[in-house]
Amino acid sequence: MLDIGPLELVTLVVLAVLIFGPDKLPKMIQDVSRTLRKIRQFSESAKEDIRSELGPEFKDFEFEDLNPKTFVRKHVLDKDELGLKEIRNGFDLKSEMSEVADAVHGRGAEQAPASGSAAPSSGSGPDLLKKRQSPAPGERPPFDSDAT
Image 1 (cartoon, rainbow, N blue to C red):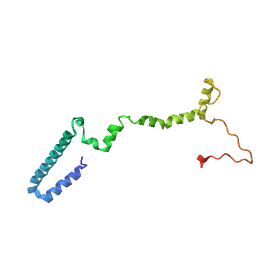
Image 2: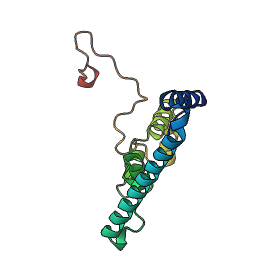
Image 3: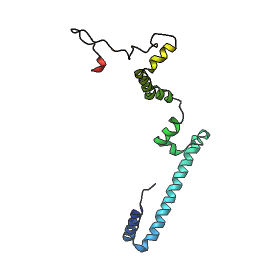
Image 4: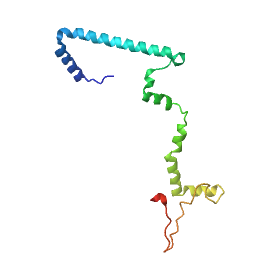
């Protein structure tokens, strides 16, 4: 809760002794501890009042769940109601890279004749393994808008 090291704690004790003096220090410690107990009791009674007003549907309600980090961890990441796994799998670069590597190494070309069709697989687009013909001497190369 508090990030106080041993050296800082000793410094606080020395400051308390210097400010309040050894005579008043025990009374001040009692007053501070009494105030902390009252604050804790007040916050616990406020939590119980809120739980009782919310009704029986929210008996398992915890105020720690209102922290955005715990809310996301509990409700979004555990359950996949929104289909996040499908979206994540749709952007799976490893499978796409393995397909490209297979095409470059010619593994995909060996599988095509085995399936019984000499044509390239449907929807695969142009054959990437085939070397393009160079344009004629007076002809301009094709324009690729994505390359600019």
